[in-house]
Image (cartoon, rainbow, N blue to C red):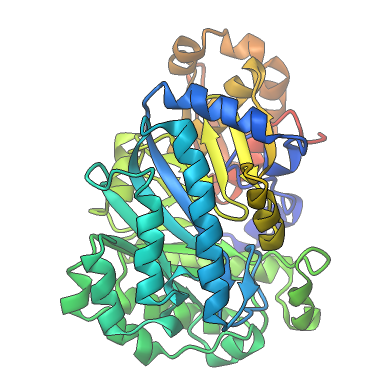
Amino acid sequence: MKNEKRLIELIEKYKKSGPYYTSYPPESRWDTDFSHENYAHILKEFSEKNEPSTLYVHFPFCPKQCYYCCCRTKVTNNPSKIEEFLDYQSSEINLLQKILRDRIKFKEIHLGGGSPSFMSERDFIRMMQNLSHIVDFKDVEEITMEIDPRTVDADKMFFYHYRGVNRISFGVQDFNTDVQKAVNRLQSLEKLEELIVPEIRKNFKSINFDLIYGLPLQTKDSFKKTIETAKRLSPDRICIYNYDHKPDINRHQLMIKPSELPNINEKMMLFVDSIEELTNSGYEFVGIDHFAKPNDELALSKKNKTINRNFNGYGTGRTKTIIGVGPSGSGRFLNYYSQNTLATLDYYKILENERLPVKKGYTLNIDDMIRRTVIDTIICTHSLDFFEIEKKLGIDFKKYFKREFNLLNQFIQEGIIDMNNNSINITPLGRIFIRNVCSVFDKFLKR
């Protein structure tokens, strides 16, 4: 990367980069008194719109605790615990069915967690049967599944294909053995290679690898080798996530030694070098932490400006709304957000009372909607056309955001954005700091 010294100065200056803007406002600003009655009323209102939607299904269990994890998971090796969960999931689906009355057309399903691939084939079939009470699978165009390579074999990969899964995401994190040991996630490269041989690969329209930068014992050289290995295996998409060390929230992260973590500058340079490696190899830098081959649907949606962003990261724009089921499942529809209770036992207790397990929510006002549209546009397209936004939102952009315009001047001077009378454009350098640019329009952040 050219002028590394200047880049490090900017990294130091903008190390407080703001939210990832999978929602606006961020989940931390949502109300905690969102009731069953609120949620049921809103869902009924939404169902009458008959909009195409995504269903996110959270499976909370994993066979082992990864120390870096920030997802809502529980460790178990007891099959009866999974069966119990599916009983309660069925209860939640049945409550939703009564409210939705088959009015929502689900175009996508995302199976996440946790490790949904940890389920047995029998349990997987039962889960899909649960979902069939609110999903007409003839309408579904994409079923995405998160896969822990340690929990599957070739036969199970064929099974997923036969059951309708057509896009998969492997949790890889890092190929280096020392790093894997430090985060309690040992998995062999050879095992992963067996899962993506041509006869398996042809069954899925897109394969993603999840990697993480900033893990203990990662170095510039070791992570470069991980990127090189990923390139050799040639997934259609690669997501490179930032490790967020918050042991006060995620207690298992106490198992990671702070002394083994790269500092902020070293950490960001791992990511910057990865951008260069991947883009030089033909991957498109879609945004924030997502990369895709030029012919992948995600890269094409970026080019066509249909790309969108939700709780799962970037999407192709096939749907704009999402409904979440399971512990911590989150939703975005109309001018509302919702989130289910996080703890699995709380999820069970609420459902036993025949109430939807929603815990938090938020109703966006007009200003929130305007700011969300601006932030979404910047973070998805890396540009903002003032006339298009004014036409869409019915505002005088420069008057409405007079204060924000003054704050943008620093980004112009530093080469992070280009701005003229008609538009804002994120520069190649600015893609690293795009969350900082978006945060200018975030009224919830203290300036």
